[in-house]
Length: 139
Image 1: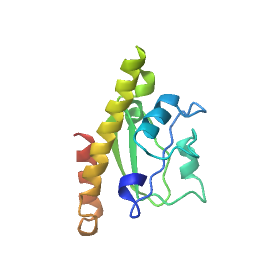
Image 2: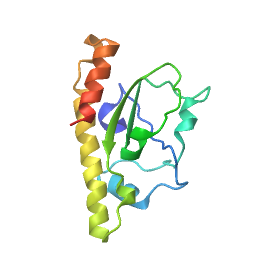
Image 3: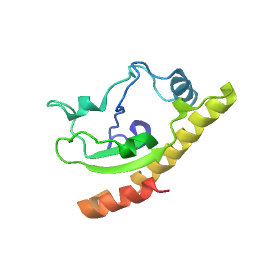
Image 4: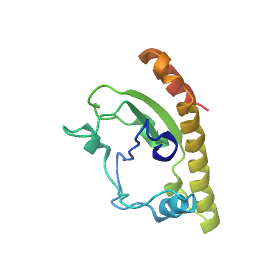
Protein backbone atom coordinates (compact mmCIF):
# COMPACT_ATOMS: atom_id res chain seq x y z
CA UNK A 1 0.00 0.00 0.00
CA UNK A 2 2.83 2.40 0.79
CA UNK A 3 4.50 1.77 -2.55
CA UNK A 4 1.45 1.86 -4.82
CA UNK A 5 -0.88 4.09 -2.79
CA UNK A 6 1.46 6.94 -1.86
CA UNK A 7 0.86 9.76 -1.21
CA UNK A 8 -2.91 9.25 -0.86
CA UNK A 9 -2.63 6.20 1.39
CA UNK A 10 -0.28 5.08 4.14
CA UNK A 11 -0.31 1.40 5.08
CA UNK A 12 0.54 -0.24 8.38
CA UNK A 13 0.94 -3.89 9.21
CA UNK A 14 0.23 -5.68 12.46
CA UNK A 15 -1.08 -8.98 13.70
CA UNK A 16 -3.39 -10.38 16.31
CA UNK A 17 -0.66 -12.68 17.64
CA UNK A 18 2.70 -11.23 16.53
CA UNK A 19 5.69 -13.54 16.72
CA UNK A 20 8.10 -10.86 17.85
CA UNK A 21 10.20 -10.96 14.68
CA UNK A 22 9.51 -10.22 11.04
CA UNK A 23 9.60 -13.45 9.05
CA UNK A 24 12.88 -13.62 7.11
CA UNK A 25 11.04 -15.02 4.08
CA UNK A 26 8.82 -11.93 4.05
CA UNK A 27 11.86 -9.66 4.27
CA UNK A 28 13.56 -11.54 1.43
CA UNK A 29 10.49 -11.23 -0.79
CA UNK A 30 10.11 -7.50 -0.10
CA UNK A 31 13.79 -6.92 -0.83
CA UNK A 32 13.49 -8.89 -4.08
CA UNK A 33 10.51 -6.69 -5.02
CA UNK A 34 12.70 -3.61 -4.30
CA UNK A 35 10.47 -2.50 -1.44
CA UNK A 36 11.99 -0.95 1.69
CA UNK A 37 12.47 -3.24 4.67
CA UNK A 38 14.19 -0.80 7.05
CA UNK A 39 12.32 -0.26 10.29
CA UNK A 40 9.88 -3.14 9.81
CA UNK A 41 9.00 -4.88 13.05
CA UNK A 42 6.56 -7.42 14.40
CA UNK A 43 3.74 -5.68 16.27
CA UNK A 44 0.27 -6.23 17.63
CA UNK A 45 -2.76 -4.67 16.03
CA UNK A 46 -3.61 -3.42 19.53
CA UNK A 47 -1.04 -0.65 18.94
CA UNK A 48 -3.39 0.87 16.39
CA UNK A 49 -6.41 0.88 18.70
CA UNK A 50 -4.72 2.97 21.41
CA UNK A 51 -4.93 6.74 21.87
CA UNK A 52 -2.33 8.51 19.77
CA UNK A 53 -2.24 5.80 17.10
CA UNK A 54 -2.36 6.84 13.45
CA UNK A 55 -5.90 7.47 12.20
CA UNK A 56 -7.15 4.58 10.10
CA UNK A 57 -9.63 5.13 7.27
CA UNK A 58 -9.54 1.47 6.19
CA UNK A 59 -8.58 -1.73 8.01
CA UNK A 60 -8.09 -4.92 6.02
CA UNK A 61 -7.49 -8.19 7.82
CA UNK A 62 -5.56 -10.56 5.59
CA UNK A 63 -4.74 -13.68 7.57
CA UNK A 64 -7.33 -16.41 7.03
CA UNK A 65 -7.35 -17.03 10.78
CA UNK A 66 -8.22 -13.37 11.49
CA UNK A 67 -11.65 -13.76 9.88
CA UNK A 68 -12.83 -15.58 13.00
CA UNK A 69 -11.14 -13.32 15.55
CA UNK A 70 -12.61 -10.37 17.35
CA UNK A 71 -10.86 -7.26 16.12
CA UNK A 72 -10.14 -4.27 18.34
CA UNK A 73 -12.49 -1.33 18.26
CA UNK A 74 -10.72 0.98 15.87
CA UNK A 75 -10.81 4.69 16.73
CA UNK A 76 -12.71 6.69 14.13
CA UNK A 77 -14.71 3.67 12.91
CA UNK A 78 -12.76 2.95 9.71
CA UNK A 79 -14.16 0.89 6.87
CA UNK A 80 -13.17 -2.72 7.44
CA UNK A 81 -12.99 -5.75 5.19
CA UNK A 82 -11.45 -9.18 5.26
CA UNK A 83 -9.03 -9.93 2.44
CA UNK A 84 -8.13 -13.45 3.55
CA UNK A 85 -4.92 -14.99 2.28
CA UNK A 86 -3.43 -18.30 3.43
CA UNK A 87 -0.66 -17.56 5.94
CA UNK A 88 2.62 -18.27 4.13
CA UNK A 89 4.44 -18.48 7.46
CA UNK A 90 2.36 -21.57 8.28
CA UNK A 91 3.64 -23.48 5.25
CA UNK A 92 5.90 -26.43 5.95
CA UNK A 93 7.85 -27.70 3.00
CA UNK A 94 10.92 -27.20 0.90
CA UNK A 95 12.48 -23.74 0.69
CA UNK A 96 10.99 -23.47 -2.82
CA UNK A 97 7.47 -24.32 -1.55
CA UNK A 98 7.77 -21.77 1.24
CA UNK A 99 9.06 -19.09 -1.16
CA UNK A 100 6.13 -19.88 -3.49
CA UNK A 101 3.65 -19.44 -0.62
CA UNK A 102 5.11 -16.01 0.17
CA UNK A 103 5.03 -15.01 -3.53
CA UNK A 104 1.42 -16.18 -3.85
CA UNK A 105 0.38 -14.13 -0.82
CA UNK A 106 2.28 -11.11 -2.13
CA UNK A 107 0.71 -11.24 -5.59
CA UNK A 108 -2.79 -11.79 -4.19
CA UNK A 109 -2.46 -8.73 -1.96
CA UNK A 110 -0.85 -6.71 -4.73
CA UNK A 111 -3.84 -7.43 -6.99
CA UNK A 112 -6.30 -6.47 -4.25
CA UNK A 113 -4.43 -3.26 -3.48
CA UNK A 114 -4.51 -2.32 -7.17
CA UNK A 115 -8.27 -2.93 -7.25
CA UNK A 116 -8.72 -0.86 -4.09
CA UNK A 117 -6.65 2.00 -5.50
CA UNK A 118 -8.72 1.99 -8.69
CA UNK A 119 -11.96 2.67 -6.80
CA UNK A 120 -13.49 6.14 -7.21
CA UNK A 121 -12.95 6.97 -3.53
CA UNK A 122 -14.27 10.53 -3.74
CA UNK A 123 -17.61 9.51 -5.28
CA UNK A 124 -18.50 6.56 -3.02
CA UNK A 125 -20.32 6.88 0.28
CA UNK A 126 -19.25 4.76 3.26
CA UNK A 127 -21.72 1.94 2.59
CA UNK A 128 -20.73 1.69 -1.07
CA UNK A 129 -17.05 1.75 -0.13
CA UNK A 130 -17.61 -0.95 2.51
CA UNK A 131 -19.32 -3.18 -0.07
CA UNK A 132 -16.59 -2.61 -2.67
CA UNK A 133 -13.79 -3.34 -0.18
CA UNK A 134 -15.52 -6.54 0.92
CA UNK A 135 -15.97 -7.59 -2.71
CA UNK A 136 -12.25 -7.11 -3.37
CA UNK A 137 -11.54 -9.58 -0.58
CA UNK A 138 -13.57 -12.22 -2.38
CA UNK A 139 -11.49 -11.95 -5.54
